[in-house]
Image 1: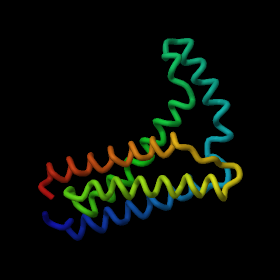
Image 2 (image 1 turned 180 degrees about the horizontal axis):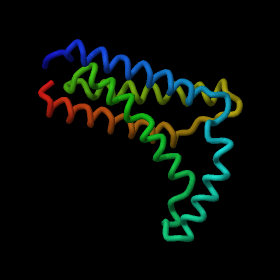
Image 3 (image 1 turned 180 degrees about the vertical axis):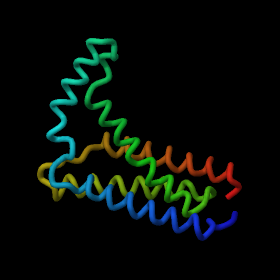
Length: 142
């Protein structure tokens, strides 16, 4: 396995640093970032359900999916740094980050709450991101 090319490594590091900053703002904001928007989203979901969207697809399911999507870039970028043969390490780091975020939210941010479901969603996103990087790096021959 070859290490990432220097130009690619700098780009991945810059993207990762930007993503980590954005993630920290979202994860550690004093109130949930969707607090003001949540009632409008619930109303939109209810209207969509009246027009054929399945009843099982509610706010909680959309939030779960958003948590999955939120962690994919983190471990994709981490796996690009460590290489496709160490994709599992990137997934584990994503899981550790998820547990740390949920701990801080539950213990130190009174308007936020931690949840096992969030850890499960984040872990799923972590594995997906790392596997995507493994596949992509394999196709590139990295």
